Image (cartoon, rainbow, N blue to C red):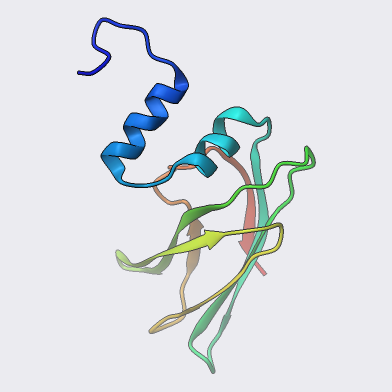
Length: 125
């Protein structure tokens, strides 16, 4: 309502979104709006039956100098409509996540709801 029928800058939008969310959105605006680059992820996953644990290697491989820092959803699929949804935090070029599971998954899906603009190369190792 504050800017209805008026002009607003990106900084105006950022300020309002921060007020509404109660969060500092500086990193988000820097990496997704002000700097060039597209998130590009390459990785794989394995399951350790003995530990009951999935290991996910997920690395940023973009070559334009950009680096993203953000949460990312991971869906662990056990079949028969059974899933475990986890949120991991991408930080830096190399990222390794270990997630406990009740059984061996049949698949792992990175960003199952397609929230993130990205290039993805991800498979079972």
